[in-house]
Length: 157
Image (cartoon, rainbow, N blue to C red):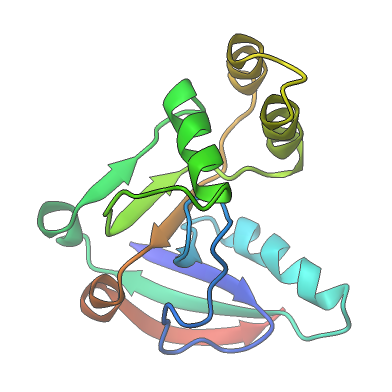
């Protein structure tokens, strides 16, 4: 499988040293199989007058049988709770890879309303079920990246 990462620099050797902790699936290296999505990720850097760099990787799918993976197929109550736990830096799971929808602007607004107790869980899930998930694959352990993610090249966006 081909995966992409949008940044302002080439990332030929992904690592966990350059990650933020309070993001969707916690600290990790975030990729997507959707090229257009990674190009959009580059946009935030271009708006800051930096270059947009799209790095491309092959993902060895034998990881599915060798790693501890959590996959969210839809926006759900479980996904919502996991996102909130990670964003609060309260996640204590030991997944090597987490796969699921991105909390983009529309989704994030719903998450924030729930997080701030302005809507309840049922209303949040109701709103989220109409959103089409994008897809992110978060590598949360260094050995998983080293073993199963292989840099193929990069391009300026």
